[in-house]
Each structure stands twice: as structure tokens, then as C-alpha cells.
Image 1 (cartoon, one colour):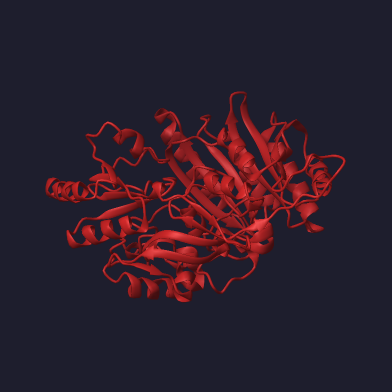
Image 2 (tube, rainbow, N blue to C red):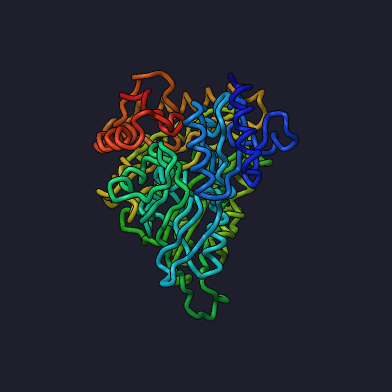
Length: 474
């Protein structure tokens, strides 16, 4: 069957030679097959690179008419490797990458395959920003349409909150413009209802005033990493979080986001704090930086005036390109002393491999504002944990997974009122068996809207490999 499907595809590509593709026997296959999740061993039927919405429409119509299953790839960072499936056509969107800023510079139309670094760079040239995640090689559409936590989200909202318009290819292969009902579903439901070929998103000016302390240009931020004294990692983590909890109790500006990371450095385990100040008032940012520095002993400080692309470039060294293993997640209202104790104890046991990490995100400010026009499920203020049981060396895979699982389980036994029932879909472990998990854990009370839209726009489950696979939820 696979041979027949491949022959049919090659006949299609012969008629449309501008649409590039590779098969498992092609010289470029290995480089195009590379994704974040090394454990995903599925061999796709072929990998194709459409150049336009019309190309995607053609591919979907052909696949549906020939009963060929297909997957969609943007950045390829889905933690379970959903970009590929065995003997399915992989539609790699990365050649559909553009940024067209509106005349009033309030919105931009972007290609469905654009990566976050490319988007940030294009906007920076215009003195503009929009919320992105922390990793430049992640696809923007996948990041934003499933939620979109990031260093600018406290001020301007999550990724889903930036979406004001969309074009997508539906289950019949037609290019359609999303109405308000469908837009609500895309804001949290991602690729469940079609292949998103274009988004229209909000963008924001970042104008820097003159100053005697800084050489200014539009688009500058104050950002970098604080590396803390980690000789006693247990004590450092608890001390920092106790201090941060007290500092936050008096209120913090929306321009400030700090993200905690525990990584395996060449010198051992290290606790890092990523600092982002996204305001033209950089002097105020320096004052807040001093307050964050005072929470623990800092052994290195890389915080400086930079740009959002510069921030993403700086993070690239901290995040491996691909890993073995599994990730886990929890959402907590607060990092209480109890939660901090459990985390601190687990960090000492964290597998010593550069792929193994622990990350703390905070949802607050504009991100925590209820938004009835999205199906994103968790709007309560909270801390989202990435418990990343990953390894670069496959020999460390099992111990890394065991560490992450044990940490996740121990955290799940802490005070129940502090543990939110919902989890972040982009980090939640995939449900592989039908009827084994409630959809409400991803979408809360919005799960009915998600199911209704799926029935309306994709009743035959053409986009069966889209995240989440709804057939496995109840």
C-alpha cells in the first residue's frame, strides 16, 4: 500500500515540480527528518515542502482523495514527535514563511511555517515586537495556537491572545478564512480543524526614549541570564523562591518576566534565572534587576540591553536541538514552601545529562485575563512546570525519564488546592489509548466547544494526527 501511495504522490509532484519533496531514500531525507523528539522513529511516506496556501490545498485534496494519511510540521518541537507518523505524508510548512506588517503597524500577517526567531527578527526591523516563546527554532503557529507562554506574555498576553485572523485549508482541501467561531477554536485548538497557512497577529511598538545611560534604538529590551551559586542547589532553589514569593506579594510590573531554569552545565548542575524587561524605561528595569539579584547569590550576570532576536539567540545555547526521553508538567497556583521542598529535593537527583532540565514559567498579568474568545483552558494565575526527563546520550534515557516521572508523581501529592486540574497541552504527555483521559484537563469548560467545532469542520477526522488526538479523550 505504501508503495502505491508513494507512486501516486510522485506522479503528483511530477506535475507540480515547484513543490519539493524527499523520500526515505533521498540524500536530504535525514536533515529534513530531524525533529526535537529523537525517540519518534516513524518513517514517513515522504516529506514535502509546499510554498503557498494553494500548494497545501492541492496536497490535502490529493491525500484525502487517495486515502493517504498526513501530518503537519512547522518547527518540529512537539514533544512526542507528532510531526511524523508511519507511512504518512509529512507536510513541512517551513517554506511558507513571511511577515507582512499592516500600514498602521498594529497587526502582521505571517506564513504558517514561520519560526519564532524569523518572526522576531522581521518585526525588530520595524521596531515592533509580539509575544513569542523562549526558543527561536520553534514554529510560531504551533506555539501560539495551543497557548503560547513566553517572556512577553505578562504584558501583552499569551500567543492565543495575539491571533486576530487566520486562513486555513479545511478537511475538503479548500482555503477558507476563519470566522469568529472558528477563530475561538484555533485559539487553543491549533491544528484540530485544518492546516493553518496564515495568521494575522497583533504587534506592538517598543519605543526607547533617550537616556544618558543607554544607546537607544526602537525595539530594545533588557534581558539575559543570572547564574546563581548552585553548590547547594537545594538551598538555592528554596531561598530564591521564598524571596520571589515575598517580592511578588507587593506587586510586580507587567513588563517584568523571570523564568527559572535548572540545567546541567559543563561545571555541574546550575540554577539560572532568565530575565526579561520589555519597556522603554530601561532604568526601571535595572532597578528591578537589582531586586531579583538580591534573592540569591549571583555568580554570573549576562543581562544587558538587547533585542527579542538577541534574547532568542542567547537561549539557543541552553536548549538542545534534539533529545531522547519524555517530558512531564504540572500547574501550581503558587510555589509554596511544600512545593519548593519537593522540587529542591528532586533537583539534587536530576539526571546528569545536558538534555535533562527543569523549567518554571509564570502565567500572570495579561495572560491570566479570562478570554471568552479562545478555548485555552487555564487562565488562573499559576506557575507551569516543565519537568524534562530528556537525555542527549541514549544511555541516560531511562534514568532521565524515571527522574521526571518520580518528580511529577511527588509533586502530584502536594496540597491539592494548590494544584490546578488543567495542564498545558504542548507539554502534556500524549494520551495513546482511547477513552483514557478527560478532555477537560486540556480545555476546561471549553471542551464542548472544541468537540462541536471538530464535528462541524472535520467530522471525518481528516486531521487525525493533530494534537490532541480527540479520539483518545472522553
